[in-house]
Image (tube, rainbow, N blue to C red):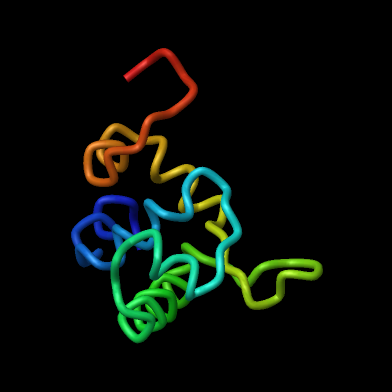
Length: 95
């Protein structure tokens, strides 16, 4: 899936979940639900979709029930289109 196809396929709920996990956070479904004001059921469904798309990965180490973004999600969020869709600030000075 290309980055433009990815942007077109994300729902608002999935974007909220991605936004909560950027940059590089490791959060549980419950923590994501609190951060996004979405139900745990909705977050679980969004996490499954984002995981299938290769944008999330199950946490490593002691936080096995936590989720984090993949390098693909980080690189997409750094593109102009990704920043606009997610309203994400990046460390780089270029926009």
